[in-house]
Image (tube, rainbow, N blue to C red):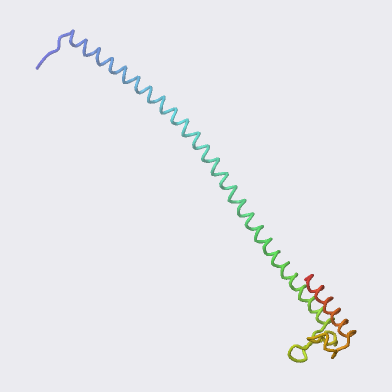
Length: 146
């Protein structure tokens, strides 16, 4: 066994003290870094909570908008149905006012007045043709509105 001399012992103790001081400084630096990391993590956690709250609000808003859109779509469908019903009713009334009948192939009458294929053949009088064409024009103008 080798025994250390007092001077060697002092050098070893001195080296150990220096090493201990360096290690204490390293521990202190690590603790400071740890505290800084904790602050950054806490700030990140607050940001994440804020973002989660915003996401929750957006989800609620999206659900509200979806419900409102469904209601409006339903109302639009009801209005479209009512409009179509009104159109049918008005067209039926126009049909009642201006009934068109087919006598045979290519022969029609409106309100009992014949509409010949050729208005110049003389089979139907000019006044009757004029009245029938007037009824037909008025019918077309009214149908075009609906």
